[in-house]
Length: 447
Image 1 (cartoon, rainbow, N blue to C red):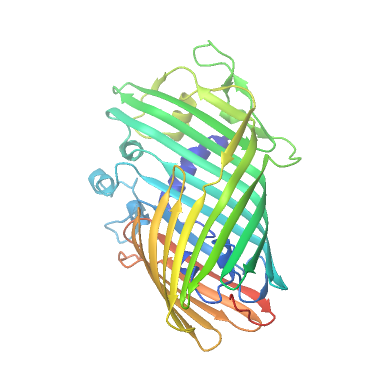
Image 2: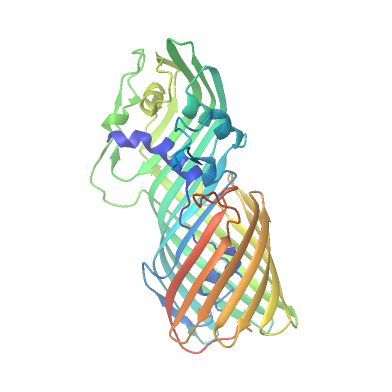
């Protein structure tokens, strides 16, 4: 499986350059009638019982990063678009637009099935999702090397890549406590499909025109059910436990690569007439992985003939990782804390503020304000503005809460500047969501 050894670099470039699918939609937190608000705070119950079908029920796209699509795609002299590696894109133009430490984080969620219903005062939700949690951080000089190859010496202090892909089966409930408090919780059982974690530091690439030397220290851990790791001799013959990337192959898949659980907790309080306060913490937990790939660098440097250009095969073939035997690794999910406040001038108009803190090495800190309206008996609308550690963003959302269906369309981050080729300009904060769920039953009040 030769392409297996390209996974790390290909995934890293993908994280920096494109959008992906995700489940969090902050503009929808205060959106009247929005079905999936319970995923951000399990106390926020949907207004009606619902059934969500795969494919149409929840499609979202989001990207958080301090680089954007325009950091990697450029207009060429012929009017077409080219990647940063195109000869028509100068190094100064490309590298001048990159931060010193490019980073990105994203969640990928595919909703296989979801439904919710009410029994007495309790609202129940059940979800089956496939999720992929990803993060990347590195140094600017990695892209200098990809663009120009090594000239002299290039130092890259750190490269971190993290991926967990898993199936999530969740049960949630919310119920009022007295007349002023609603409490909610979701229990998630997790079955791991794949995990890849790379932590490489002190990367130095030296080119003297005839040979290229790479030195680095790092670990690589991977859990993909059915993968068999084959080892062989090192380049100097001193060891026989070096991972042979070209010989990785799949065996029969007879189960999950890991198991775990997580918990969401939330509450909403009617502080006094018109003012609603809320708090939630989500993804408290993680997965225990059985990792067939459990390797670390041995020798601190490797040498090959100079090609003068970036070569994926050459880099990965040069960096020898020594297999240490199957490892057991517990990895936490990135936990998110949300604090919300909404003041309703009436049952038709309100204003909200939401603070979001996502913990972990690829953290997100955001404060978002919104104006919310409910028109007639079925139309909800929200407009929002946010500032985060990734910059400013503007959002808007529309929700149609009819008797037989709930349709929603929204944007957490609307691009305000475009190139002549309609590439969004600025940092990588582009987010959109839409979906259609079947609803039934009478509209229920929260309090």
